[in-house]
Every structure is written in structure tokens, then in C-alpha cells.
Length: 378
Image (cartoon, rainbow, N blue to C red):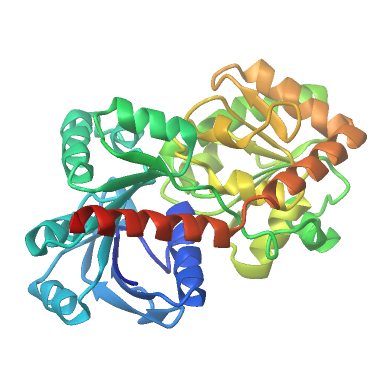
């Protein structure tokens, strides 16, 4: 099968969408399929043996400087004609991937789209709330051109359907359980994450440092945690547009900002925490929670978005009302203080992660591609 894939984000940026795209490309290569990818900014020229077509991108300043908005050019149409895809996959179509939608409709190519970021909700946290309704209408219009629309969690299937998006199906969750493993835990990394206090109980967050992640809530949460666990510390792993503001909010006496980590360092950081705190209310899935599970670390997360689809209450972590800071502190402190409970939950979380491999998720995706192709032929 030949697949033209359009994405709004790709390497060198790292986030859940990029991870989903890269892992999927790796699996598609192993399964013998062909892919051409269109991505904005300055991605690598190839990935997993497939050509990555670079599309000039402009920074989404001042709202989100990390995001590169791809500017479609006539060369894209020529490359599609040369490749002759069986199906087009628009990943999170907003701008560049919207051109993938248009290309599919113009050329009569079967179309699959996937919904990874709830852009209308993000407009509020990014202080461009006036765009919420137009964004929702635009995204609904794009997705309703597709034969199949994919979401990565049950709650988001329901939400997308409620927003008027048709033909919505579940693209199974998946995680790398080889790279992310309890075996990556290290005293050296704990010392780095705790600023030289490796024995201290450690709460960790890994991901983008940006407004839509609701990370400002960790400041009052950690103050309340330390009322219960006085030597508890917080590690913030990642970078993003809110980094400087968060450094001003968090108490430097017990908070460490590592900046961006990747590869073995990132895997070790995940495994070296005691509890993963995930306050975001806008996740469509929350891949970092699955990566924490794979690392044997339980998650305390917001009862919102796709997170309830990931956390099995009191088995792999806890769900908390987003703004109930006392409840957050109680659950985090419970895990920090009870090593046996924490270890048991970590083992259960690891077992859960082992059930969700990338091969099965990608085979499911290929089935959806084939459905779109078959429907187009009929």
C-alpha cells in the first residue's frame, strides 16, 4: 500500500503526535508499505527509509513559537502525482494537513484523517479564545471529507462525534515498552532530577512546558504535597513557551528544571521518578502517561480529556478533579509515603503498557486505510 501522509508537526519537535507519526512510519516500513511524508519546518530528509518532503514553515508567533505552520506550494501536487498514493492520511488537519485533505478530494484519492489535538480547546489556554468557534467549524469541515476519522482514546471518539465529526473510529493506544522500562531507573538520573538529593521523594512531569498543559497548577499542588511530605521534590522535564513563567511560579528550593531531554536520558528520567503528575485537561490521549506506565511509574492525572481512558483508578494511578488541589496532594502524598503501594501500582502500570504495542496499533491503522480504499471503489 502507498500512503501519502501530511502532518502539522514532525521532528525535530517532540510531542505525542510526532511520536505517533514516527512509530507508525517505522511499523509501516516493517510491514512492507510505502510512505511519503509532508512536514513543516526543517525535518530530516528521510525517516524509516521514507522520503520526508520539507514544507516551508513560519513560526506561530507570538502565540506558540515552537509551532511551524506549513505553507503549501505547487510542488506538493507534483510529488503526489509522481507517488500515486492509494490513500492519503491527514494527521491533525489544520493548515498543511488541510492541503492533504484538499489534495485527496481534488484527485479522488481515499482519505483518512486523525484527530490528535483538540485545537478549539487549546485556543482558550493560548488566549485566542475568539478563534474557538471558527476553529471548530474549520476542523469539522476538514474531517468530514474523510471516509474514516481516527481518535486515540474513547473519550475523544465521543467528543469528536459530539462536535459533529462523522465516521469516527478508535486508533488503539500504543507505547514503546523496550525503550521505556523500569530498568532505565538510575541513581545518577535521580541526582540530576533532584539537584543532588536522590533519596528525596520525587514527583515528575515530562512534556511540553506550555499553557495548555495546565502546569501552573503544580505550584499550589506541590506546596500542599510538601505539607504532607516535607522533603518531596518536583522535576520538570521538557521545554516550551511557558518555561520562563513556570520557573518564576515554582519554588527553586525543591523544583528542578532539566530542559529538553531525549533518547536514553529521557527514558531514564521517566523511570527515575516516583510519581508522575499530569494536570493537563486538554489531552486527547496523553502518551506520556503510557510512557510513565511502561517505565513502572504510577500516574496521578486530571479527570478530563483522554486521561481517564489511560489511568485505571487505584490500579495504575489516580484520577483527580482538575482544580481540587487538596485531592491532588493527598493522592500524590499517599504514593510517595507508601512504597509497597507505589511498587504494586508501578508493576500493574507496566503490565498494562505491555498490552499496547505499536505493531497492533499500526495493523489496525492499515485496516482503516483499506476500508477507506474499499469504500472509495464501491
